[in-house]
Amino acid sequence: MIPWFDIRSINLINFLFVNLIVTVVVLGGLLATIEKHLPTAIRQTFRYGKHALKGTPDRLVSLLEVPKAWFKHFYVFAALWALAGFGVMMETYVTGAPAPDYVIAFLDTMATNRRIVRTTPTETLIAMTLITLQCLRRFYETWFVQVFSSKLKINLSAYLVGYIHYFGTVVAILSQAEGFTRTGPVTLPTNGYRFELTIPLGLAIGVFYYAWYHQYRSNVILANLRKDKTGKVVNQKHSLPTGDYFEVVSSPHMFFEIVMYVVLFALLHRNSSMVYVLLWVVSNQLMNSWLTHQWYVENFPNYPKQRKALVPYVL
Image (cartoon, rainbow, N blue to C red):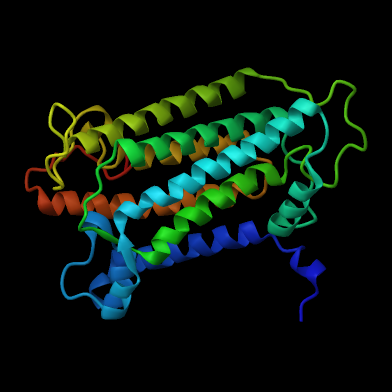
């Protein structure tokens, strides 16, 4: 039996993200190269939504599928979890004291008890504020803007991954922040934590907001394809989106998701866990955008040739 202290020396958050990355890269690579030779169970598990598997489904895998509309559930969790992390961070930095012991003990369990301070209060404050705004906006979109098809399904594993992602991201941001580890300055400055906004940090906030806003516009455009001019839902079919960044890329919402996490990584680049968060987001969005682009090309004979799959004018 492994002693408890040995378990706490393992960074479980890094372990989770590495496993997600490997799974997406391996299965995505197989789908891109030898999909027709793969078992139906694997293809059906990985494909969902409009690019779901065509043909006879695997009975066992079908039992593990849930409505795609359940995406809304993990954005409820994401919003609440991000707000909790934001609240603890604000309490810590406003009072000028270390985080509560139960928070540090939790982070020790999830992200090792060997954590050291690698990010400043300013970087942490900005990153937690930005991810909280993103979670709140996605909660609003999924519940009040987006229109989910009642017929589409997703695999239970894909549904659970949403919870893992937001849980792990918030934990990763706080795990190596000043005030949230057992190592660091023995005493805090007289006036508490120091906050210094620099031009690079200001630029990062601006880039994040630009991506945040245009991701919202992309999701509104997709939702409006199923609504009339009054906002009433009139159909659940997939139509060809146009406007804004849809003119140059098939999945601008996925592209801007990557941009936002690039910003978070830039803010917290000394945090050793954030590289895994970024690689997971990039690999996941890359594969989903490729499948989406492939679906558009197959279903719309006159699909605009200038549109790339994910990165405008590039990929």
